[in-house]
Image (cartoon, rainbow, N blue to C red; front, side):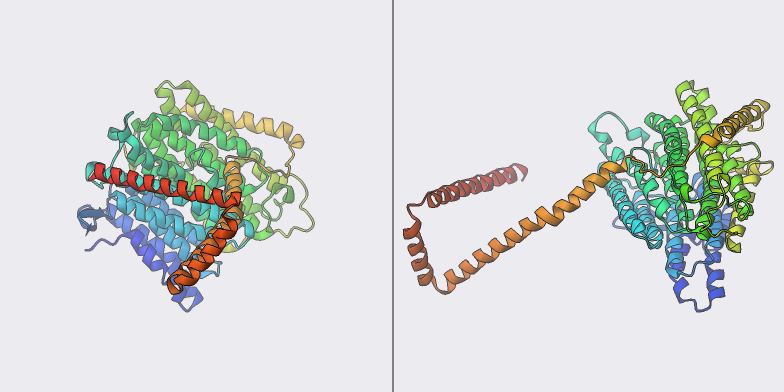
Length: 593
């Protein structure tokens, strides 16, 4: 039987959605796209299509074999969780009537699967850019001016990422003649030969929101549509994590950058006033754990990074779903405008808290069986500073996601009188319930054993050792106690939080201002001068006698003026410089050829 690429199926299947006439049929079809993709993945793993279809899905193009279907343990691992979460996100989005938002979401999902299965760098680049183009519409469909502006900044960042990636790929192909997507660590050295791989690394790091390239995430995700943010929280950064694992596992600088990211994210999450912005900073923090594991490079660390990516996709989507449900009902996301929702959105609160306990890594939840792998890998390598940074980030995670956000939204005060509050639409609750169940299932036996069985490396890691359980409960108990004691002194404040995007915004606004004023004025001057000289040349060739008399008369009137003498001198200098420039170009061309 012919193997069908699940990503390409989703991309092309997305275009059919607007043409389905009946609303119920449209919903069924929309839900079925990721479900069919998931079934294809299951059948592929079971060998239903025969041998690994890597050799089947090749396209010969310009002398190269483009590999669209590289199937191995690593790519399948990510493809599974992307398909699972796309099913949940589609259920969460069923009440949305904008067909084109569904189209963008499915192209986004399909291109992510395409990037995961890409066996060559050119195919990776095509799907990489398709992810960026399709996902920006999930921001713009929010329909606000802030979403529009954030979307433009988002796409600029991803154009930069794609350009660096393409440039690096081109240099790599020129150097090696190969387009195969493999580990680049053998090419990394201190010489200029590393430039192609540093460019590729930068392209991956931007999409992974590695600091200081993270501001696009915390700027755009809070502005995305309510349902669009659930897809975005799962796909782009985790696809970049996959690319880093595939291409740069063991690069030491990533371990230190990841550890700093883990703390950096929770610090900013502690001071922002917006629920989804807080969760966005926690994506940066959680990606930090993954990047750190990739940099450590040991089998345990890589397993931890990949396992955390799997569980993070599920619980982070649940958290965005929970906050999205609040925005769907109340229209508010700032803590200073929320509070007292527990009596009105009780089920939403409990489902959200399952995600919060998972992201902290509490026993019986999925984060507990994945995140500590990276922490213990750093301890095995005797890196105490990284170990302390990661443990400190875990405390900050509980404080912000597990205590501060739910306290501010559901408990901190009486519900504002102008706030309408109730449970969100049923499809949103169903999607949250499924993701909450997955958080518990993969955190307990036999779920985590199934989870471990599909990791890239065999693992004998046992999460439920008494020491690990007791240590985690101690961190949870003391952090919660400290928050409860000081909760009345805790105040949410409306404020502008400056991050690294401040520099980009200032420089960007000044660049736009320069283009709108100075550059436009220069263009007008050039246009006016060009028109004047064109008119003179026209007169010269149509009536040379008149031109001669006019020029002679003008010269006689101004021959003694200082301006005339300066003009003659300037023309002489200009002609001399032009001659020297032409001669220089001639010498360069002669040297080359």
